[in-house]
Amino acid sequence: MKSNKIYFEDVFKFLNKLENESIDLAIIDPPYNQSIDKWDTFKSEEEFFEFTYKWIDLTIDKLKDNGSLYIFNNSYNAAFILTYLVSKGLKFKNWIVWYKKDGFSPSKTKFVNNQEVILFFTKSDNYVFNSEDVRIPYLSTSRIEAARKTGILKNGKRWFPNENGRLCPDVWEIPSVRLTKKVNGKTVKTLHPTPKPEEMIERMIKASSNEGDLVLDLFSGSGTTAIVSKKLDRSFIGCENNKEYYEYIVERLKD
Image 1: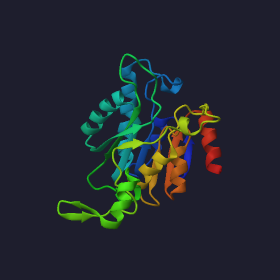
Image 2: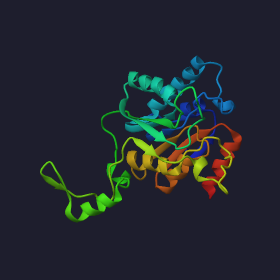
Image 3: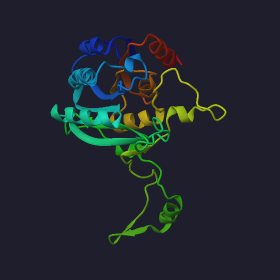
């Protein structure tokens, strides 16, 4: 199969054609079973997890020994998926909380959902992680500015802030696409109902791959992972079985 291409194909047919141990990094935003659309609707929870575990098994085979895997989902599903990945021998790295700042829906019967989960696993203990490439700004700008001059005394040593910011934590405060694409203060409906912010995908790709590596984009949706991979000089390959989404991805890649 050719890289730098998104295939219009069912996820299982696609994965069965893909070469084993060919992928450096997989970023997967799969169905959540929340009935957002037909592709996100299953007859039962049992059917949903049977589907989920099936594509996970195939994906693991495609990862190189030093490959990494990120999977999006809600916190309930993520708990089951995490347990399954551990049972398959993958190495747990992080339960990343994406603080969306808009939530799924208001609720007066429980705490309002205001997050999604990103599971970060690796296939072995030998993997890529470029921590210096994903530093983020310090929280206290005034304190850090003062520390640049004189430093801060910690455990008998003087600490000076890193010019590139602090190391990235496992809580990511990144607004959803829905919030950042407002027109006249109002949210605008996107072609795909759950697009992920480029900033977030960029962070994963920079952290867990190097230039020239191959990034897998299953359930491509709006094609953001492919687009960001291309911008960052990585190769990509993926699939999407919704014709409208697929055609949109093709146009984005042309642009």
